[in-house]
Amino acid sequence: MGGLAWPVAALALALGTAEGAPEDAPPGRPAEGWIARLRRREAGAWRRLFDEEMPAIYRYVLSRVPRAEDAEDLAALVFEQAWRSVEHLEDRGLPPRAWLFGIARHVVTEHRRRLFRAPPVVALEAFDAPDVGLEGHAEQLALAKAVASLPRADGEVVTLRFLHGLSLAETAAAMGVTVDAVKARQGRALRKLRELLGEDSGVVR
Image: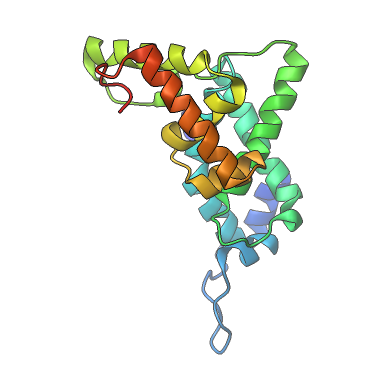
């Protein structure tokens, strides 16, 4: 990805003005949660959010759009929109990555509408795996094609859960559905993948 810098000029300016500000609570004041600090747009909290979640957001966007250049721009846009709308971030006991993935889904959808076409559900680059040899690449290709053949919502559950590592609750929050809906889509998708790839393929267990 080449080490993406802070994506928004206004955000970079805000971080610059707060450079060197202590991240810990002053003496006598209780430490606040990460989400509360994000809502106040504290520099240290946003730096942590960017450092921890930008790689995952980039990989997600890259799996949904055809060009790496677009993926970098769109991943940056996710953080710009997050910065601008952080007052809508609620503490529901989930890490803020679920909220970010929800924004990413919207950003990608709007990008597709502008392009008037739907790219594949999964791009191989998004697996971001080390060199695993020809056999491993063949398995990745088979898996990517199989996931791309799923209904869109089912394929997205698979990518969020197993490619990007979101929990059931995080996936539900990102997609704006219930945990039961995620479970149902996941079960349906995995059954279909086993049919497509075969129980003995070693790709889906």
